[in-house]
Length: 255
Image (cartoon, rainbow, N blue to C red):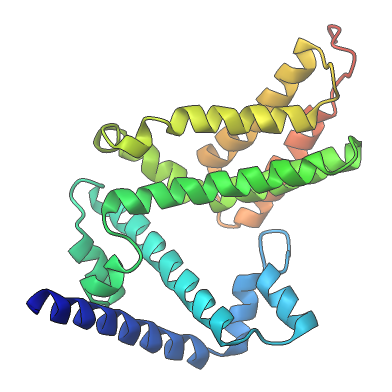
């Protein structure tokens, strides 16, 4: 009986926390939401675009949106704490306290710190998978290649805090089950991106050029993102250099 009471209480606390955050989100007004919907290159968030054309979503969609927003807030706060004091020295209680929610509300989304880290990696891989799927549906043209790179730069820029956290906490994260396949999964995605950047039966030189272009995007962003005030300018510079690299010689012969 006590277990049932505790279970009902946990769900009630989670629902109350969600409702409070929903009210806060509405109070901020549409202007702040509009700014958040715009990406580094002025892209409109898919949900905002859908609402503009089809009207406001029904109650179920609103609930899903609030749940997704809470999940993203937990991920962001966890990243901040992992960066400040390390993964192994951060507890779920501290994450909940910084969010100003109960542990029950936090458990509704994540049962452990490892779940949070796993979700961050899965979200990143999901973006790469979506980009590869889109690219495979497009003609193999220079315009498509440029758009692939534009979208990839955006993904890397948005995920730079995750990369930095994984790098700084390598020792603590190495023993996690989710870490054991992360390198393999990353290589699979990079291979997929290389494949959509080149023509069929491309030479080793062309494949190497594509791989170095992708690697240069990550290294360039991670090296200089903390040294610039306007990250949109860094995005533009990284994209310009990467596009130039990808447009190099096409016959695989020495330049």
